[in-house]
Image (cartoon, rainbow, N blue to C red; front, top):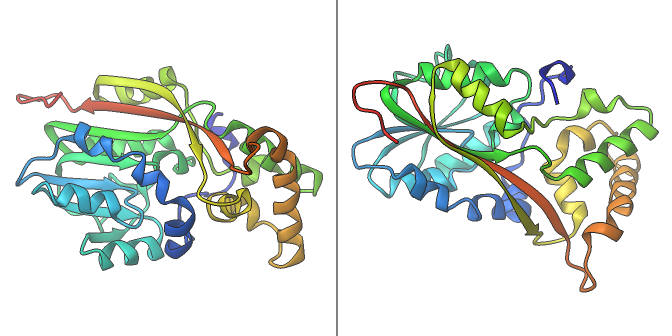
Length: 270
């Protein structure tokens, strides 16, 4: 998927924190080990890029670090603040120049957010580099090539059938390992670890709830009410044979790209 396919801004600006907590809490739960990879230290200043409702920001803070959360969604930022997280509304594409983000950081952490920053992924990586002190680290996990592939295909196909341009609606940037490594290196990072892995994920409820909560840019293209319900039902019908098991449980084929990189300096963190 190239940058040229992004004809609209599909950043995470219109999330509902309550729906996310109900339908997608597994996203943070399954990435809890990423905090161990970050290995935050007491006194470090850490930016949580795309902090969502602050669950992992809170976990980092409990390790003694000073955390600033940022997210494009005001509702998510409000939820993070309710957890006691210092969080601000800001777009990751503007990370390097945003007046809302003050100073530099000892580390930048990001879970399940970078694949929403499709408009200009290189600007996000460049901004992360600019916000780190020499030797500081960038640790992240997000959707890699093949992530939720059948769901993405069904959403696109059904949107096209109903007269919408799927390229204009598709919010996701799922790069290959080589592509993202090149982006990190282009920004100036030294890549310490980078790999992708499959994470088949049972959903806590029905596929319809996942679509409503996590495929908003597709779903919201349809007028609320019958048109939107019909679209969701049609996408669900395309997926039921492949993703629902005999017990009625839905399992979505997630693929995660996880990386650790650092900005070169006198005291690199690997």
